[in-house]
Length: 310
Image (cartoon, rainbow, N blue to C red; front, side, top):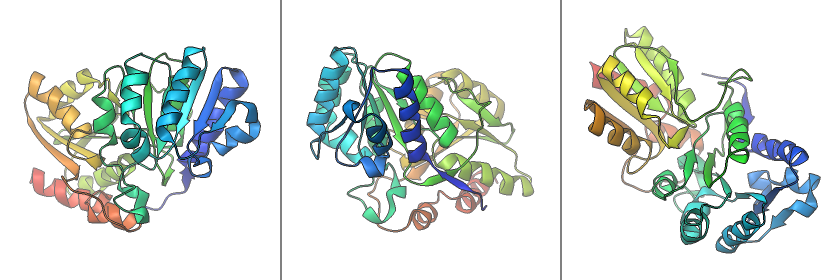
């Protein structure tokens, strides 16, 4: 469905500026990608509190850790591939092991990085980050949820990983929305529960409309916080529908689907189907082409889910 879309990365940059106005302890670090991550907005407004570390992501993480030790609140940005992969040891041993107040806001996660291909498409970052003790992992679905997630991270102690989409996304939420650690039931249904987050939420919402025309009523749960995951809401829906389907712009290994399986298997075992990127690397193509190829757009999701339920 055609909708007006907003730059989620721009919303991130603008939110940093607003936070910086109200809190002089906010500092921002980038790895020579400030135009792509939109931290350039903060750099323009507060040049004395912005640090371009260059293409040295490990150094950037340890510098942020040092700043956190002095009472600053560092927001660290680069592509998800580099934040979760290249700098993994520094994130684990320096930031999380020490429980430091560092916020990692990584852009360009998932297959929607597009033409840059497999080398830049982080399909494992959620899995990597949620496996580290002390880390909170957030995957916002639109500009408003991104804004509120960044504000939440700024106001709560400890390490955070926020995955910010490269693609422009339509508004799903407005200012009445209240971000928190709880999952949100977006739509109630009885035939199956679809659990999703990030860029795939809008596709699932559109998919539900297609399914409704086929007489299939699905429940939709938005889980922006993958860790700590809201087990209560997931279990409650599983009891109701007896069938879970997860959808994510991420590998099905270790991501949202795996997190949901952990909750379900330990508490209320029902059938779970994970839809995402299978155990493979991505390919080069436009974001739209790749979402279709990997079965993550609304039409392909409707075909898949119809087959599962019928």
